[in-house]
Image 1 (tube, helix red, strand yellow):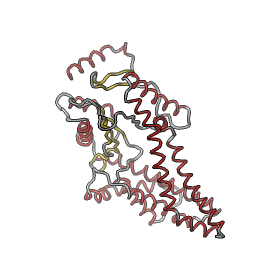
Image 2 (spheres, one colour):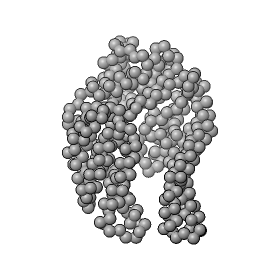
Image 3 (cartoon, one colour):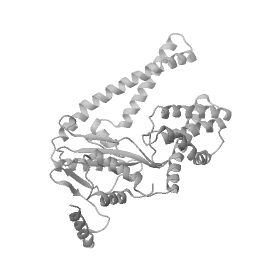
Image 4 (cartoon, helix red, strand yellow):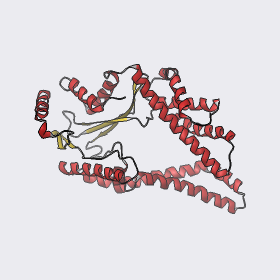
Length: 376
């Protein structure tokens, strides 16, 4: 919502480090989320601007999907009248509404608040629809469907591309093994911090002995862990579904059915083909988990701290290199900060960069050292 997270974290530390003790890491993560909702000042304009960003991105996304569906259908049939566009648009919007309806609602909202959200942001929704749909106007029915979709985007637990992530990791005083908690958030919506559920990794003898988690740009870390790029894995699964449909169509046409009759039969088989694809996906995930990720985590479990730091830095460097060598936006780059949190030494920097020369700022380090001494 326009404030640097680093400033908010330091403000939180200054306010609570000396007089607040938490029973566990999860409690600390929840307390920090409540602090962002209740203790960080914002006004109605800040909230409205935040909600407008979320809505406008949802509107733009569905507009692009509607346009792609229209041009794809036009290519298939050779010619398509503009009057048919709204039927295609409503079909795309309906599919997205069904998808969002299947997602649970955001935990921060009660059922009573949902209707209030609709009324509170109706003007913003209409404004975003008006500015987000260039070209031919859509019908009133399509606009109503888009309004419902946008309201669902605000209600549901799914977050926008403007989301921010927080990771809290460490040890409770009497814990031997570490805990990591993470969550993502979309800022303030209707006076509440809209955020995802807390994702917890609790290392323990009775549970996982080690884990590797990537945040933000995850593709290279997941490729390292799973032995295959997630995007390629998804492509294979989609092509498998297409191949099964093509194979079924060939069989039906071989039995003397016309192309249209064969397609109707394939459509009838769609639920079965979808279940087969899900079964393949599940078996593939189990194989990747057992043959690749499990072996890596077994190795990580017994690595000394220095090698863990080198592994983490290497994975970030690999992500940075991949971004730099591809057409994707370079969101990871430059020198990498590396730290270790251990039970015996606490938080220790292995590598840390500063945006200013250290030798020219001795007073900063003296001041920083005094502040840490007071906090201890």
